[in-house]
Image (tube, rainbow, N blue to C red; front, side, top):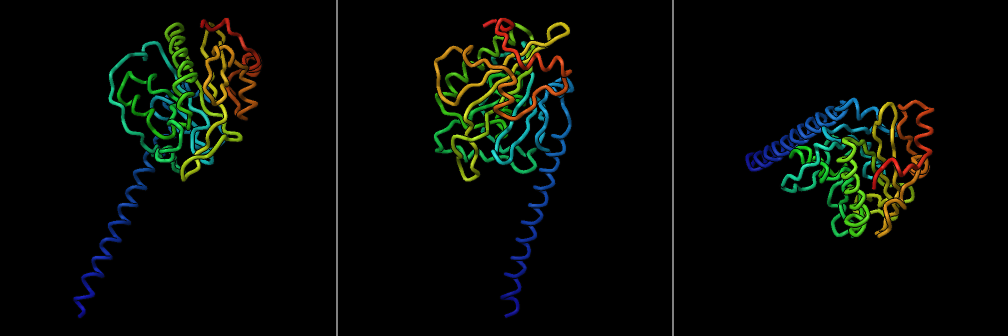
Length: 268
Protein backbone atom coordinates (compact mmCIF):
# COMPACT_ATOMS: atom_id res chain seq x y z
CA UNK A 1 0.00 0.00 0.00
CA UNK A 2 2.87 2.32 0.85
CA UNK A 3 4.42 1.86 -2.61
CA UNK A 4 1.07 2.56 -4.20
CA UNK A 5 1.11 6.10 -2.76
CA UNK A 6 4.88 6.67 -2.62
CA UNK A 7 5.53 6.60 -6.37
CA UNK A 8 2.78 9.11 -7.30
CA UNK A 9 3.94 11.38 -4.48
CA UNK A 10 7.55 11.24 -5.68
CA UNK A 11 6.37 11.91 -9.21
CA UNK A 12 4.42 14.97 -8.06
CA UNK A 13 7.46 16.27 -6.18
CA UNK A 14 9.70 15.73 -9.22
CA UNK A 15 7.29 17.55 -11.55
CA UNK A 16 7.01 20.43 -9.08
CA UNK A 17 10.81 20.70 -8.80
CA UNK A 18 11.21 20.68 -12.58
CA UNK A 19 8.58 23.43 -12.86
CA UNK A 20 10.28 25.57 -10.21
CA UNK A 21 13.72 25.10 -11.75
CA UNK A 22 12.41 26.02 -15.22
CA UNK A 23 10.71 29.09 -13.76
CA UNK A 24 13.92 30.11 -12.01
CA UNK A 25 15.99 29.63 -15.15
CA UNK A 26 13.46 31.63 -17.20
CA UNK A 27 13.67 34.45 -14.64
CA UNK A 28 17.47 34.35 -14.76
CA UNK A 29 17.43 34.47 -18.55
CA UNK A 30 15.00 37.40 -18.54
CA UNK A 31 17.19 39.25 -16.04
CA UNK A 32 20.12 38.92 -18.44
CA UNK A 33 18.10 40.63 -21.19
CA UNK A 34 16.92 43.37 -18.82
CA UNK A 35 20.47 44.06 -17.61
CA UNK A 36 21.88 44.07 -21.13
CA UNK A 37 19.24 46.62 -22.19
CA UNK A 38 20.36 49.13 -19.56
CA UNK A 39 23.61 49.78 -21.45
CA UNK A 40 23.60 52.66 -23.93
CA UNK A 41 24.50 51.30 -27.38
CA UNK A 42 25.08 54.67 -29.04
CA UNK A 43 26.31 57.77 -27.22
CA UNK A 44 25.24 59.90 -30.18
CA UNK A 45 21.66 58.60 -30.05
CA UNK A 46 21.63 58.96 -26.26
CA UNK A 47 22.21 62.72 -26.65
CA UNK A 48 18.91 63.09 -28.53
CA UNK A 49 16.72 60.98 -26.24
CA UNK A 50 13.69 62.56 -24.53
CA UNK A 51 13.58 63.04 -20.78
CA UNK A 52 12.50 59.82 -19.13
CA UNK A 53 9.10 59.59 -17.47
CA UNK A 54 9.74 56.10 -16.06
CA UNK A 55 12.53 53.65 -15.25
CA UNK A 56 11.87 51.65 -18.39
CA UNK A 57 14.45 52.92 -20.88
CA UNK A 58 15.49 49.98 -23.05
CA UNK A 59 18.51 50.10 -25.34
CA UNK A 60 18.40 47.58 -28.15
CA UNK A 61 21.20 47.40 -30.69
CA UNK A 62 19.41 49.45 -33.34
CA UNK A 63 16.87 51.55 -31.45
CA UNK A 64 16.06 52.77 -27.93
CA UNK A 65 12.61 53.03 -26.37
CA UNK A 66 10.80 53.95 -23.20
CA UNK A 67 8.13 51.43 -22.26
CA UNK A 68 4.80 52.55 -20.82
CA UNK A 69 3.44 49.72 -18.70
CA UNK A 70 -0.05 51.19 -18.36
CA UNK A 71 -0.43 51.67 -22.12
CA UNK A 72 1.44 48.39 -22.86
CA UNK A 73 3.59 49.94 -25.59
CA UNK A 74 6.45 52.36 -26.07
CA UNK A 75 5.98 55.97 -25.01
CA UNK A 76 8.57 56.70 -27.70
CA UNK A 77 11.06 54.91 -29.91
CA UNK A 78 14.27 56.64 -31.03
CA UNK A 79 16.74 55.61 -33.71
CA UNK A 80 19.17 56.93 -36.28
CA UNK A 81 18.61 56.38 -39.98
CA UNK A 82 21.52 56.77 -42.35
CA UNK A 83 21.75 56.70 -46.12
CA UNK A 84 23.86 53.54 -46.18
CA UNK A 85 21.28 51.66 -44.07
CA UNK A 86 18.68 51.99 -46.81
CA UNK A 87 19.21 48.76 -48.67
CA UNK A 88 16.60 46.58 -50.34
CA UNK A 89 17.65 43.20 -48.94
CA UNK A 90 15.21 40.30 -49.13
CA UNK A 91 14.76 39.13 -45.56
CA UNK A 92 12.31 36.59 -44.18
CA UNK A 93 9.61 38.23 -42.10
CA UNK A 94 9.85 36.81 -38.56
CA UNK A 95 7.08 36.21 -36.05
CA UNK A 96 6.41 38.93 -33.50
CA UNK A 97 8.09 38.19 -30.18
CA UNK A 98 7.47 39.54 -26.68
CA UNK A 99 10.39 41.82 -25.77
CA UNK A 100 12.28 40.02 -22.96
CA UNK A 101 14.12 43.23 -22.00
CA UNK A 102 10.95 44.89 -20.62
CA UNK A 103 11.25 44.19 -16.91
CA UNK A 104 7.52 44.61 -16.22
CA UNK A 105 6.65 42.39 -19.20
CA UNK A 106 5.88 43.64 -22.70
CA UNK A 107 2.43 43.11 -24.18
CA UNK A 108 1.82 39.87 -26.04
CA UNK A 109 1.18 40.07 -29.79
CA UNK A 110 -2.02 38.06 -29.25
CA UNK A 111 -3.69 41.20 -27.89
CA UNK A 112 -3.88 42.40 -31.49
CA UNK A 113 -5.50 39.25 -32.87
CA UNK A 114 -9.01 39.94 -34.23
CA UNK A 115 -8.87 43.42 -32.69
CA UNK A 116 -9.35 45.29 -35.95
CA UNK A 117 -5.93 46.91 -35.59
CA UNK A 118 -2.58 46.23 -37.25
CA UNK A 119 0.60 45.60 -35.30
CA UNK A 120 2.02 48.92 -36.41
CA UNK A 121 5.79 49.32 -36.29
CA UNK A 122 7.22 52.44 -34.65
CA UNK A 123 10.78 51.84 -35.84
CA UNK A 124 9.85 50.57 -39.33
CA UNK A 125 11.10 47.18 -40.48
CA UNK A 126 11.79 48.85 -43.85
CA UNK A 127 14.42 51.06 -42.20
CA UNK A 128 16.28 48.05 -40.83
CA UNK A 129 16.86 45.77 -43.81
CA UNK A 130 20.64 46.16 -43.64
CA UNK A 131 21.01 43.18 -41.28
CA UNK A 132 18.91 40.27 -40.08
CA UNK A 133 19.42 41.23 -36.43
CA UNK A 134 18.35 44.84 -37.04
CA UNK A 135 15.31 43.69 -39.04
CA UNK A 136 14.24 41.08 -36.48
CA UNK A 137 14.52 43.61 -33.62
CA UNK A 138 11.69 45.63 -35.13
CA UNK A 139 9.36 42.67 -34.57
CA UNK A 140 9.61 42.87 -30.78
CA UNK A 141 6.24 43.78 -29.28
CA UNK A 142 7.73 46.81 -27.51
CA UNK A 143 8.12 48.35 -30.98
CA UNK A 144 4.50 48.03 -32.08
CA UNK A 145 1.34 50.03 -31.48
CA UNK A 146 -2.28 49.40 -32.56
CA UNK A 147 -2.89 51.11 -35.91
CA UNK A 148 -5.90 51.07 -38.20
CA UNK A 149 -4.96 49.20 -41.36
CA UNK A 150 -5.74 52.09 -43.70
CA UNK A 151 -3.71 54.46 -41.51
CA UNK A 152 -0.76 52.06 -41.25
CA UNK A 153 -0.66 51.36 -44.98
CA UNK A 154 -1.71 54.87 -45.96
CA UNK A 155 -0.66 58.22 -44.52
CA UNK A 156 1.75 56.68 -41.98
CA UNK A 157 3.44 54.68 -44.72
CA UNK A 158 3.70 57.81 -46.86
CA UNK A 159 5.49 59.58 -44.02
CA UNK A 160 7.88 56.66 -43.52
CA UNK A 161 8.77 56.73 -47.23
CA UNK A 162 9.29 60.49 -47.08
CA UNK A 163 11.68 60.04 -44.15
CA UNK A 164 13.71 57.56 -46.20
CA UNK A 165 13.94 60.10 -49.01
CA UNK A 166 15.28 62.65 -46.51
CA UNK A 167 17.82 60.15 -45.15
CA UNK A 168 19.12 59.64 -48.69
CA UNK A 169 19.28 63.39 -49.29
CA UNK A 170 20.80 64.48 -45.98
CA UNK A 171 22.85 61.39 -45.09
CA UNK A 172 21.68 60.90 -41.52
CA UNK A 173 18.57 61.70 -39.46
CA UNK A 174 17.64 60.95 -35.86
CA UNK A 175 13.98 60.08 -35.30
CA UNK A 176 11.70 59.91 -32.28
CA UNK A 177 8.26 58.44 -32.83
CA UNK A 178 5.27 57.08 -30.96
CA UNK A 179 1.57 57.30 -30.29
CA UNK A 180 -0.33 59.94 -28.34
CA UNK A 181 -1.41 57.85 -25.36
CA UNK A 182 -3.55 60.43 -23.56
CA UNK A 183 -7.25 59.59 -23.83
CA UNK A 184 -6.87 56.45 -25.98
CA UNK A 185 -9.47 55.66 -28.62
CA UNK A 186 -9.90 52.16 -27.23
CA UNK A 187 -8.13 49.34 -25.40
CA UNK A 188 -7.53 45.95 -26.98
CA UNK A 189 -6.79 42.43 -25.81
CA UNK A 190 -6.58 40.92 -22.35
CA UNK A 191 -3.78 43.34 -21.44
CA UNK A 192 -5.83 46.35 -22.58
CA UNK A 193 -3.27 47.80 -24.96
CA UNK A 194 -4.03 51.49 -25.58
CA UNK A 195 -5.06 52.57 -29.07
CA UNK A 196 -3.41 56.00 -29.60
CA UNK A 197 -5.56 58.92 -30.71
CA UNK A 198 -2.74 60.18 -32.95
CA UNK A 199 0.86 59.40 -33.88
CA UNK A 200 3.86 61.69 -33.97
CA UNK A 201 7.24 61.59 -35.62
CA UNK A 202 10.06 64.05 -34.86
CA UNK A 203 13.12 64.39 -37.09
CA UNK A 204 16.36 66.15 -36.26
CA UNK A 205 19.65 66.43 -38.11
CA UNK A 206 22.91 68.24 -37.46
CA UNK A 207 23.78 70.91 -39.99
CA UNK A 208 26.99 72.85 -39.46
CA UNK A 209 27.05 74.00 -35.84
CA UNK A 210 23.26 73.89 -35.54
CA UNK A 211 20.23 71.66 -35.96
CA UNK A 212 17.31 71.29 -38.35
CA UNK A 213 14.16 69.71 -36.94
CA UNK A 214 10.64 68.95 -38.06
CA UNK A 215 7.69 67.31 -36.31
CA UNK A 216 4.52 65.63 -37.55
CA UNK A 217 1.35 64.95 -35.59
CA UNK A 218 -1.20 62.84 -37.46
CA UNK A 219 -4.69 61.93 -36.18
CA UNK A 220 -5.27 58.17 -36.09
CA UNK A 221 -7.31 57.90 -39.26
CA UNK A 222 -6.57 57.51 -42.95
CA UNK A 223 -6.03 60.69 -44.91
CA UNK A 224 -5.01 61.63 -48.44
CA UNK A 225 -3.97 65.07 -47.24
CA UNK A 226 -0.52 66.42 -48.11
CA UNK A 227 2.00 65.52 -45.40
CA UNK A 228 2.89 69.20 -44.98
CA UNK A 229 -0.54 69.68 -43.42
CA UNK A 230 0.50 67.57 -40.44
CA UNK A 231 3.75 69.45 -39.75
CA UNK A 232 3.65 71.04 -36.29
CA UNK A 233 6.09 72.52 -33.80
CA UNK A 234 7.86 70.19 -31.39
CA UNK A 235 6.27 72.31 -28.68
CA UNK A 236 2.86 71.15 -29.94
CA UNK A 237 3.91 67.49 -29.70
CA UNK A 238 5.25 68.10 -26.20
CA UNK A 239 1.93 69.66 -25.23
CA UNK A 240 -0.03 66.67 -26.52
CA UNK A 241 2.27 63.96 -25.11
CA UNK A 242 3.70 65.60 -21.97
CA UNK A 243 7.16 64.49 -23.14
CA UNK A 244 10.23 66.77 -22.91
CA UNK A 245 12.15 66.29 -26.16
CA UNK A 246 15.86 67.15 -26.59
CA UNK A 247 16.58 68.10 -22.96
CA UNK A 248 20.35 67.88 -23.56
CA UNK A 249 20.41 70.61 -26.20
CA UNK A 250 21.27 74.03 -24.79
CA UNK A 251 18.06 75.74 -23.65
CA UNK A 252 18.37 78.82 -25.87
CA UNK A 253 18.87 76.60 -28.93
CA UNK A 254 16.20 74.12 -27.85
CA UNK A 255 13.57 76.80 -27.33
CA UNK A 256 13.96 78.18 -30.86
CA UNK A 257 14.21 74.73 -32.41
CA UNK A 258 11.04 73.46 -30.75
CA UNK A 259 8.92 76.54 -31.44
CA UNK A 260 9.52 76.69 -35.21
CA UNK A 261 7.96 74.89 -38.17
CA UNK A 262 10.40 75.51 -41.04
CA UNK A 263 9.34 73.40 -44.01
CA UNK A 264 11.95 74.90 -46.36
CA UNK A 265 14.68 73.10 -44.38
CA UNK A 266 13.24 69.80 -45.61
CA UNK A 267 12.81 69.20 -49.34
CA UNK A 268 9.53 67.42 -50.05
